[in-house]
Image (spheres, rainbow, N blue to C red):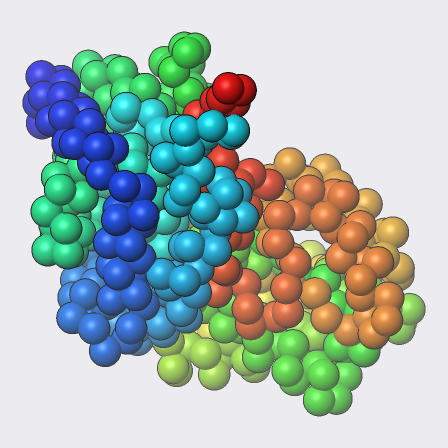
Amino acid sequence: MSAADVAAALERARDAGRLLRERPARSAVDALADVLDAWRDPGSRWQKALAEALPEATGFAPETVREGLERGLASFSGDALRELLQREIGGADALDAARGRRAGAFETTAVVLAGAIPMPSLLSIAAPLALRSPVVVKPSLHDPVTAPLLARALAERDPLLGACVEVVAVRRDDQAAIAALCAADCVLATGSDAAIAALSARVAPPRRFVGYGQRFSVAVLGPDATRGERLALSVEGLALDVALWDQLGCLSPVSVHVVSGEARAADRVAEGLGAALARAESRWPRGRIATAAAAEIASARAEAEMRAAAARPDHASPAVSVAASPGTAWTVVREVDGALRPAPLHRFVRVHPAPDVDAALAALRPAAAHLAGVALAGFRDAGADVAAALADLGASRVCAPGALQSPPLAWRRDNLGVLLPLARWTDIEL
């Protein structure tokens, strides 16, 4: 698709958006809410269509896609959308307010998607529409399915709302087409930090740029989560968080930080997590993986095994250990300290010991700017204080193991609101 095609799509969206804003905001919100309700139902034809198309397009295993969609879309309801609109904007009435504080929409919003997980793409398209801003969306190379399927669902429910979504298939290296896309009044983008920086440089005020860059998640387990039933529950939940979407999302944990004064606590967590990942592999097999990614996993395993072999046999303190599948399906490396190391992803997890909470926070602090979610368990009454410290560090979500991949619709990704960054505000003082 050429730059001229993108420019034409923007103009069509602009015209449709004008018509949409002539209607009461509540009608657009109601239509969008109905579509979300349809998509969140595992038995609906829309979720079934998404579940059928994504494995071939993205490489995820069908079982993983079905589980991921059912859990990830569970909170994407019409009621949740209305609650979000009320919380951040003041409700649909604020979009039509004739006095007081009025929320407005940009005439056009360009959405540049990345990654292969459908929920962030769905929300990135739905959020501007909730404000009655038409969307021109560039689908991710890794997920060409979600955006056009959502456009079809919207058009079936409300033809005008459907006309407010234009899907443009352009490559990120097509500079002319990307420049035409960035001529929108607001640009929302997801991707690597480098991609976000490059797009941001193209959007000058008064146009607005909203970017979501690279993020990762971790787990922090306290003493109560390192043995017995609580350990079993924690590792089962973490195995689910890792297995869903093959650890490729910002809410996928890449490391587990075990806070305990007991030297062997990290060993128990690593052993339990390895066994849980083996069970997860039988239920939700890992999908396709590129040769380069498999080689990276093999290299990281070999490096960890060399460090494990270098430890003296008679050394009393715990050493590096590696638990792994016969292939590259999953890997757990038990580290000897809290120092963060590269994460090859694709179900590769490092387990780090920490003598206390301050040590765990210190280990995470160098990467705090990229921290998204934290799975937290095992601290009893101190859990609230630990969660507050993680929030101060920069985490935008703290939840129980097993819940990372099921964020609420209103989750403030990257510590931002969902709708607020996309809204324009006017105080009418008459």
